Amino acid sequence: MKFLFLILTTIFFLENNFASDKLYLPFIVDLNKLEAMKSNELQKGSIDVGKNIFKSRAVNCLSCHEAPIPEERFHGNFGPSLIGIGSKYKKAEIRIRVIDAKLINPETIMPSYFKIQKYPRTPEKFFDKTILKAEEVEHIVEYLYSLK
Image 1 (cartoon, helix red, strand yellow):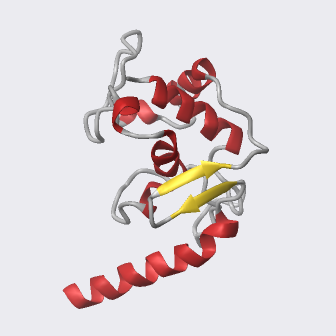
Image 2: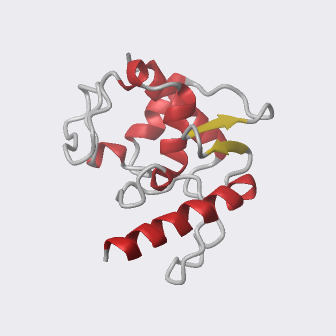
C-alpha cells in the first residue's frame, strides 16, 4: 500500500512538474523551491483589497483559518492560523499555497484557487476556469504577507 502511495505521489509531482508551465499562467511555479513567482504583467496587489477578498464568502478563508480580523466574529481553527504568516513565508511561498496548496501537500483539503477546474463533476459554469483571477491572488498574497 505504501508503495502504491509512493508511486501515485511521484506521478502527481511529475505530472505537475511538466504541466506547471501552462497550468498556472501567468504565474511561474518552481516545484523544487515550492514557490510561485508572479509574471511582470501582473501588478502588485493591494492589502486592503486582499483583506476584503480574504474575508469574503467567495473564498471563505475564515471558515478554516484564524486571522487578525477582530471585526469578523467567526474564525476557523481547522487550518493553520494565519496570524504572523508574513514573518514565516516569502511572498512566493504564500503565493504557491494560494494558487494550489496541493502542490505542497497533495492531501490538503484547501481548495486550489488558481488551478483550472477540469474534473468530471465540476459544474459547467466553473469548468475550465479558476476560482480566483490572477489579480485577486496577488491581492490576497499582499494581504497575507502584511500579517507580520
